Length: 227
Length: 227
Image (cartoon, rainbow over all chains, first blue to last red; front, side, top):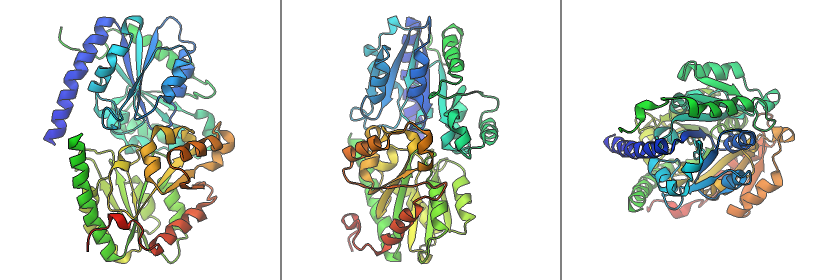
């Protein structure tokens, strides 16, 4: 797969340039991923309402449209939209170049934290670094216990797994213990949170994780651009 | 996007070859797509149990593993597994060449109907014909009303949209009328069914749709290989 490797090498070079710009501006960046409809935007809506002392912005990745960006912009958060269609061929993920092309529109000097909400997809987004400090994913309990085993790269590449829609647990056959067992099989001991973006249950935990990120020195230093 | 077009042209050539093989064997083929966890496999489990008079087989596409194939094989349905990782670079969709590579393992002579269960993804699977007669998708009500607007190509390319998990409607804020409005906005009047693979509600309707397919002469004739 020499072609694929070449593409990923080129992507990493641009990701390092993005990273250098984020570092220069003192902005911590999170790449937030999930399947379609897992609740990334709902989680962010709940989170930004009470995120005190941190200036947060969102870079919103979608194939088409600006539905999620509109939802977040209504909460007075600076939001920049990237559409992968048509400019980037309707890609199923964000890559470093797409993020780079959007940076002139992101007010980095006014932010402490930038959340990049990726395209809803459990496969390709995990393959492309975009210059982020941390990767997090949302997995809804409605998706079934088997998802870590079926999409292991995604679950392995994240340092936080937010298990969403727990308000529905009592109405599902979902076996939470089995899901967590499968999660540990692909990413042993990865940090996880059980939340409901709909009711707000445990969203404080995600808010605290986000809020702590800018202070965590040296995070992701291994992929930092050389000085 | 000349490169992308070249790839899709090459894919269509192989798709026509697959189609010719399916036609020669008298097998009708459905490409079944959805987001991860929408319930494709659960729907098939419910369906094949009582599919009388039709010999059905499944070609199961996953990035990795054979969890879904194992579930279906336990119902004594001929199942063939395609993994896109590592043989095909961990692709997020099936293409015509992957399906072609699996055909020697599919007992076409013993089948009337072959369901190709695609990789869980609402973007790329819609871009690649694999030689199918019909395309159907499953969308779970847990995914939200906005999905047709966010992934329009997928909803537009299917002739049947199965709206699954309706047993959960009473526990969700999901606005079914709004979802159907959005669906008609991208694919006006497309056939839709409201089902619960979990309880079995309305699965008869999907079973009847599948059962009628082999008799529908001339379906997809436009993409048939020349004689």
